[in-house]
Length: 273
Image (cartoon, rainbow, N blue to C red; front, side, top):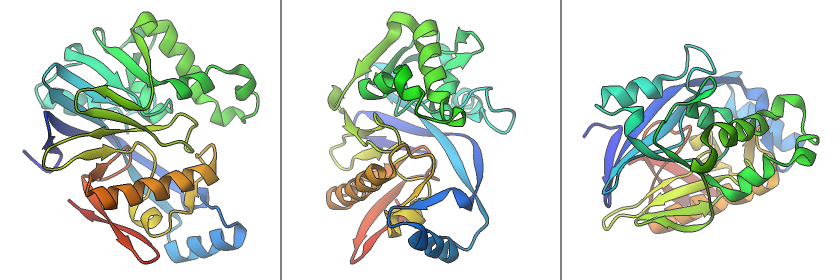
């Protein structure tokens, strides 16, 4: 297996890179306020950054499933490469029996669609119930600026195109060897998937961290894409501590490969696994 593919328990896990998201560093936030934010920006020292956009293919006892689906064709030619990577691995959309969604943001869920058709003709779409509840709440939609409302459109489209193949899930074991862990803050129902193995386990933590080295060192640093920055920071600190304590391998929507977490006196560090 190459560096993008590893086995955990009953599953071979293949990282599928969908593209690279570019943003200005001004989107960084800090729970301690403006002064701490400015200090973090100064220490970061970069006007912009690029982060990988990933999803994952899991081959196991009952066939092929995905964790998240990338962007598909929705964000232009710079994205959508997860589909090509899937085919290059000898797999196809028609083989996917299940897609586990971490949260309903575009870079994780727009790949479910081909225009007004489902991209995965045989798949059930498993969605954290709390996330779908939020993104189908029109009162909640009205509290957010238009630029932050994409998840509501995705939720509507998901239910319309996949219908009864949408399944709501919550914390705990959802399949033999796979556990959903609630990781709220980035979105209210944001979740990670823990793949249990006898020798080592893998936490796919979605968007708990976008910039792993920076945010591991100071978990209070977030991005303005977090719906609840304070909660996201508490979740980030908690999942980093648990990963370090349990010895998990970690990856996620914006992690370049597979890592482990080490606890330090005043934060954490991530190191290549």
